Image (tube, rainbow, N blue to C red; front, side, top):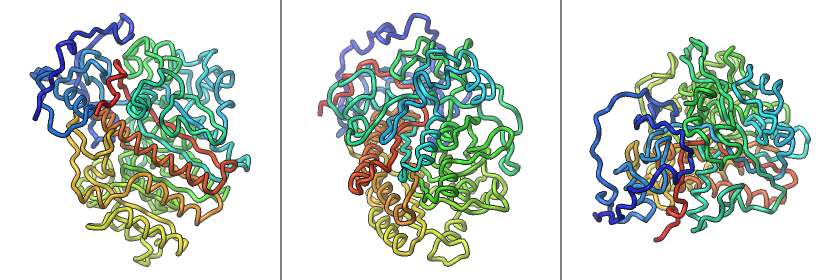
Length: 581
């Protein structure tokens, strides 16, 4: 172990450095934690805690072998003091918020334009359209000079591109939780310099790619309203929400890189414009179904009306093969929103049933046709508790019941068997397991289900320097075995597999790819793993671009690279993220 020898100047910085204004009110570190295992966004209630005595930054012992960024992350977590950045609303504390924020979210578009949705055409300039979107006119949300789009415009962009007959290959790439500040941090690390301070940026593949027409913009990700108590067996809300969405650029900023005039607005704590913070299920549903819904719900309105996603419509009306890929459990909020319907994002087994075309709590008599490809994680997560999952929960795997897996597996020969199942296999490379399943699916004209994962059910998380050695975070520490790294494929490999199977099933397809580990790292206030997760997702984007180029089909392709929502990291000293190893 070695000690950090940073000087006392670490402790002498001031709020004025942040440029956050003078009207800030600091309420104390609430120690907000995330009650779902890394994947939930709802903060716990504030409670009084005994003061914890922490070491000064220069007193923190650093484990041997850490690179410079990992060491900085470790020091910040142990001391809760960090001059180069902070999470939340208290600049003097490294961490005071582990939930989302309502920051404007960047969107990179390849093969199409955002012109119909931004500038003079922004729906936020039109009170009637705002009312139609939210079912009300949220406080201070109609803005006559708004330049930004809404998240539901991502759905409209996909729909229009497919309806036009021009686009046969549509890719929606969602870096879960990657706001502008997160991609900026990754770009600084990769560029080894601070190359920009505003705009679309440079250094990452989706920032620099120029081999097709492209566009850049940003959108509001606010939800319809806050999560309410639900009955998953009856598929209904048990009460009405009292907190609603909206966006006020006076407090949150008119661009994603603006410093908020009220640091507490973007986490729902401004009394003048008390707009609720979005979650992944609501925000993802906006992009896949074009509607605002309540936090915690998947493609269903408060009146229990189910909405149709772009994947359902394209599958039914346009003959598209459709699929999802994720680095986290296959039925987590973002991939779930591509196809499933449920009043609760926590009803995991039923959400998976929708995705695989099985009878579920929301489709008890007429199941959905099912996705053509479902690839991701969740393997190994066992539980006997049905909390959040209703009466039809089957003890065993939290996300995919064994009987459901067997029912769809073509090797089992059942009446519902339509999928080649690729599952984590002891002693066998995950890449090889995946490749074998792809060959079988393509040759047999089957669908494909891939089920992998390490600790907490997700793929191993890489860190910024490319290794898989995360440091301790607010939520503990991730540690991987050699078997974890061998037996799991990477997100880019899952993406390549999905494309191959989808292309074998139809002349046109729609694919969602989620880099979910960005969100999980940001919930843990872990900038090191957050940057690594961006790089992991970047390679998946690179795989998509490479396939399109190889086939020579950019004229027929649409790629959207974006996020579902933001977090709340403030990078005060950007140069601190430049690696010096």
